[in-house]
Image (cartoon, rainbow, N blue to C red; front, side, top):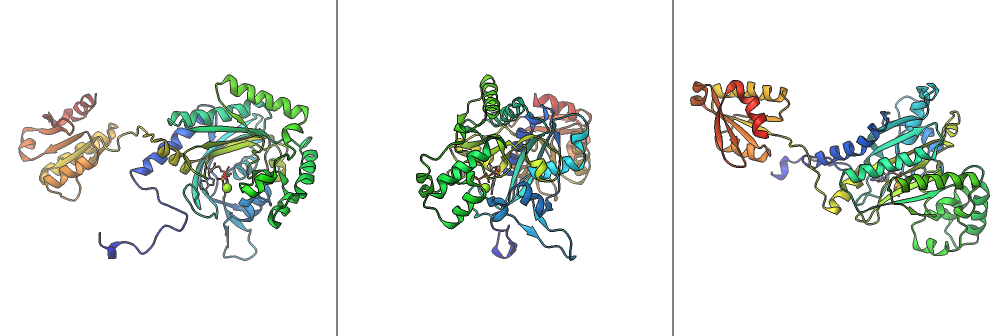
Length: 427
Ligand code: ATP
Ligand code: MG
């Protein structure tokens, strides 16, 4: 293609387009992640791509990177209207939607929902870190039950496994609850205030000290040796709860690593927190994460609804598949490719193409009046196993040629048996 014919526009920085054939992998990943959820009673939910800013500042947390640095806020034309932001994550929106629809009042808790969509964060773009990315997520709203935490974790593990991923690990921690966390928080603050930290981090110590534990910088990590650990401050109820989650995971054959420093980037987590990391992704190693958020509903003005959920990153899951060299078995985009020779054959074959499609066979057609050679090239490029070729002589005999593009074998097939012939040839 000459340069002049390329559009002057490019996808914005930090974004990329999903283009065939790779886009099929993304669809397959979304399908694979959601399949275990759909088998476990989770219903599909779809919320707007933007929400009121306050939903996220309250629901995700004023002190989080997501809210302070990464949110895209929108300006609206009319004055005095609500301030909106592109959604940076899914949980707050899904909970907002569930509350708004009164799903929690139907007397059937937990409300189990799954979602799939685009999320937006203003980040420094790099491999595995984009400004537009996609997640599949799940939320189980309104029940406090270690089996529910375990269920979600098991479903995520099953999703990764069904994709053929091996090189991922599950990190697990408990963040305590409103009984035990305040005392721990104070003890941690006492420890952190004595360290040599920059101003931003000092502020974080005052607002959300637990997140300092998650600081990736070596200079900070070095100073954290000897920091009080939540594990030693958990109340009996939290300890017991966490132990049950661990036992249920073990019984399900799910391996995990206790990571007492795992706090994650969102403020709303309580008790169970977990992250899936993959060894093949360099520094963007988190492929998914989640946890329990018993206080979130109240933070956004709802009733007390203890809940748990996760979100798995689709982009990083695709990178993980690449890193492991996993090739998904994708359904053939085209099984049969029709090549007409002449106008009458075009009419007849186009009819057969429609018939094959209606019978469920993925079929394509040599559009644009191509000659035989080019049309056969298109057939080969399409990945179709069979070509359906017809010229005037075939039509006169009431047949089309069904050609196996792998073996080169060809046979004449009467019009009205094309569908069944293709079916039986497919085996
Ligand atoms: P990180 O620590 O890498 O910034 P995070 O804790 O911000 O991740 P979550 O908010 O838990 O991520 O989102 C869940 C998943 O969504 C992540 O594990 C990751 O796979 C994916 N994800 C998050 N941010 C991005 C991004 N900017 N680009 C691509 N994927 C992302
Ligand atoms: Mg992040």
